[in-house]
Image (tube, rainbow, N blue to C red; front, side):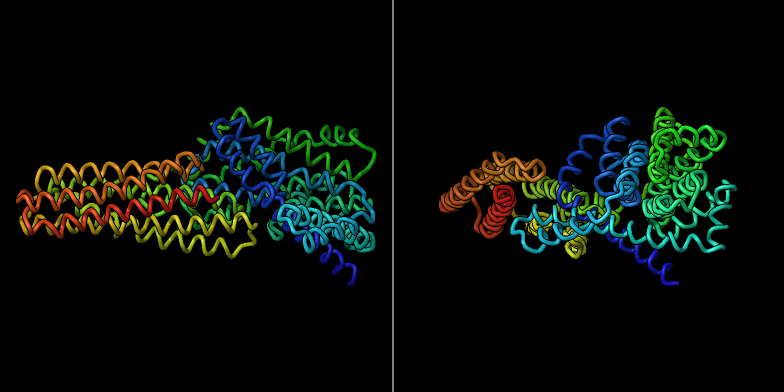
Length: 532
C-alpha cells in the first residue's frame, strides 16, 4: 500500500513541478509569447509554429488550449487560427516526455537546490524566474524517480501485472484506460510520463504503452471541452475541433499499429526512450497529415456546432477569465479592452462637440448612453478582472502592468464623465435657449479638435508603447493650458464688448474647464507610457 501512495506522491510532485516550471517560463517569456501570438497567427503555418513553441515553453497543451478558447471567446482569434495552433501544440506537448526519458539520477537534487537558492536569495527578478524553472525541473525528475522506484514494486503485484499484460494484448482496452486516466488527472503529460516510468521498470510492453498514449491524446480534450461549456458557441467549436483532431489521429493510426510499433522499436533500444519517441512520432505525423485539412476540420466543426445566427452584443470584447491561465495573454487582452474603451471615449468627444456647437440633442443623449451603458460598467468589469488577475502569481513586471492598466482605466473613465458633463451642459443650453456667438463656437471647435488630437495620440501611444507619441501628447497638454487661458480671455473680451450674452458665461466657461481637465487625463495616459 505504501508503494501505491509513493506512486501517487510522485505523480503529485511531477504535476506540481510542471506547474512551477510553467509559471517560471511564463514569467520569463510571457511578453515574448504575446508578441509571437500577435505576429504568428496570421497564417496556418505561423499559427502551428506558435502552438508548438508556446506549448513547449509552458509545458501544458491543456493550458494553451484553455487560453485559446478564451481568446476565441473574446473574438481575438478565429476558429481557423485556433485549429492551426492546436496542430502545433500537438508537437509541443511531446517535449515533456522526451525530457523525462533521460535518466538523470541524483541531478534532480542539484536542480532543486540551485532553484531554491535562485528563488530565495537572488535579488534580480529574472534570476528568481530561472530559479522557478530549475526548481520545477527538479521536482519533475524527483517525481519521476519516485514513481519509477515505487512502480518497480507495484507492478509486480499479480493483479497489476495481469492488467498491464492485457493492455499490451488489447489495444482498445489500453486506449480506454488512457482516456479515463487522463480525463481524471487532466494532464496528458502526467499520464505519458507515468507510462515512461513504467517503461523504466520494464513493467509494460511497447504496445501497451502506445495504447495508453493514444488514449491520453483523446482524454486531454476533456479539459478544453469542460472549459468551453460555459463560454460562447464559438469557444465550443474550438473544443470540438480539438476532439476531432485527436480522434481522427488515433483512428487513422489504428490500422497501421504493427508497422508503427516496428518503426518506433528501431529508434532506440531503451524502452523509456521508445515510449517518448512513439509519443513524438505520432503527434508529428498527425499534425503534418491534418495540416492541409484545416479548413475541412473547421467546416466539420461548424456542422457539429453551428455558428450563432444572431450574435448577442456583450460588454467586454477582448477579456475573458480563461486568459488568466497565461497572465501575459490576460494582460494583453486587458490592454486591448482599454484601447477599445478609449475609442468609445473619443466617440463621446465627437458627439459632445456636435451637441454643443450644433445643438444636436440626440448627440448629447448618445454621450450619456455610452457613459451609462458602456464606460461605467466596463470600468467595473476591468477593475474586477485586473483584481482577480493580481491574485495570481505574477512577476514584478506583470504586477506593475496591472497597476498601470488600472490607472489608465481610471483616466478614461474620468474622461467619459467629463464628456458626460459637457453633454448635460449642451442640453441645458438648448433647454434655456442660450446661444453662443460665432467666435465662441469657433474657439470651442478649435479646443475640441485639440483635445481629440491629444486623446487619439495618447491611445495610440498606449497601444504601441511609443514614447515619441507620448512626449507629443505632453506637449499638447501644455498647449491646452495656453488655449484654455486664451479662450477664457477671448470670452471676457466678447462679454465686455456685448458680443456674448451674460447668461452664456457659466456654460461656456464650464465647457472650457471640462475640456482642459480632459487634456490633463490624456497627459496622464501618456506619462504612463513614458514611465513604463
